[in-house]
Length: 108
Image (cartoon, rainbow, N blue to C red; front, side):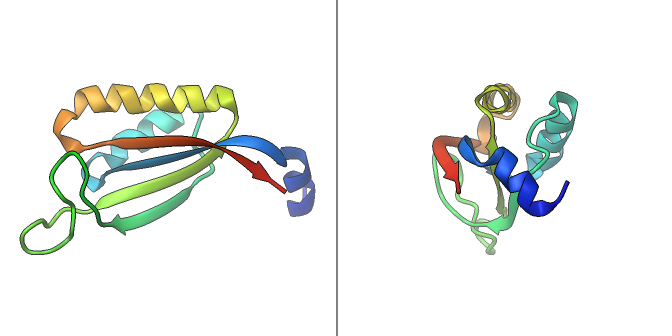
C-alpha cells in the first residue's frame, strides 16, 4: 500500500497519546509496546528536559538525567492498552515520574 493510500485509510479522528518518562525506563516501554502490539508507530523525542512531579531532568551537572517523549496516534482501543501500560510502569517505577496525556486528533 502506498503512502497516500495509507493516509486516506487512517485519516479521521484518532487519539494522540504523549508519554514523557525517564530514559531509564524506555526499554520497559518498548518491551510492553511490542508485547501488546501497540505504540509501534510513533514519534520519539530524545533528550527531553523538564521538571514535573519528580526530580528535574535537565541533563546538566546538577540534574544529569534526561527524559524521553513518545507521541503516538492510535485508535481508542490501542489508547486504552497504552494507558494500562503507563499505569503498570508507574506502579513499578514510582519515583521516575511518568507523565501521559491523551487528546483527540484529526488527520486530514
